[in-house]
Image (tube, rainbow, N blue to C red; front, side, top):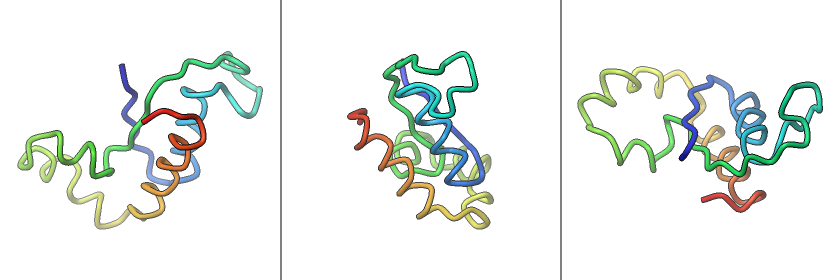
Length: 87
């Protein structure tokens, strides 16, 4: 199982990624201290983009790539996977 995120900001996507991987870092929700160990990607990451139909991706997500800071999102998501060992 893997989690696919689509948040518009790297920081919020990173928080969600850490929550489903290592547990809620804010200790405010039901996943506080609960390590689910799930692998997580963002919809704009190359690994996801390469795995889906190009036409569908362009139709559903392509426009968002123009307004999101894709590099920052990719960096944040990669950092979470490296930090918690989920590739």
